[in-house]
Image (cartoon, rainbow over all chains, first blue to last red; front, side, top):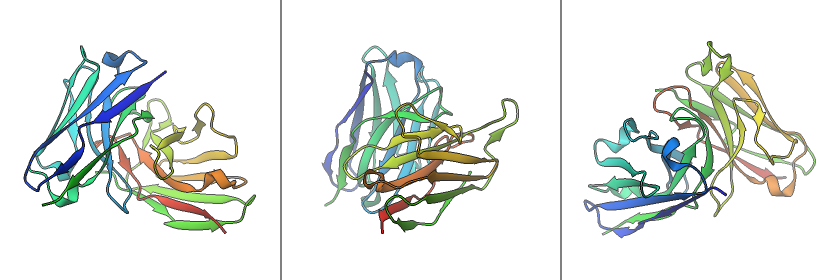
Length: 120
Length: 114
């Protein structure tokens, strides 16, 4: 059974950093792309970043502006999202999701999400 | 970047009636080499992760009730709920996965019971 579990969320001051993790199980992790999607309060789903199965290809939303870095450790079945210089508008529930067949594919499994709050 | 625009932003439908949600992409998401539309629909309920309902514009995922159907091609797509049930109350999103950035969502359509 496919499982994705996010962790690492919490309350952080503006300008500080946070690293989110997405731990996967139930499938051959090293053959799937993983995406990060967020939902800020009262808004819709917003795609954040993606990493290919081997970590060699990465994509980011424009609003990341070089502040976020996605990486993965296939030996640990985990994807990371390093978020630096956090802003108030980055506050959201962050989900990781599996790309069904490569980076350019539908998201067939999602984690439950982890809450990020940016506040002084 | 491809922009996805849904209409309406919200709709209220009586139980058992049809609900129709439209999605328009700013660029075609039809890949001519395989004749597939790189368009998905998701259902999102509060406190839960989004659920993939439909891929390739019209292919229902396993376990999705057949009252959900998708149609359209190129730049114009539709999600139809043929007979609205209580458990269908949610926000629905279309998403393109054809071009970079690889996951652009529409703004969402909130479906409620009238």
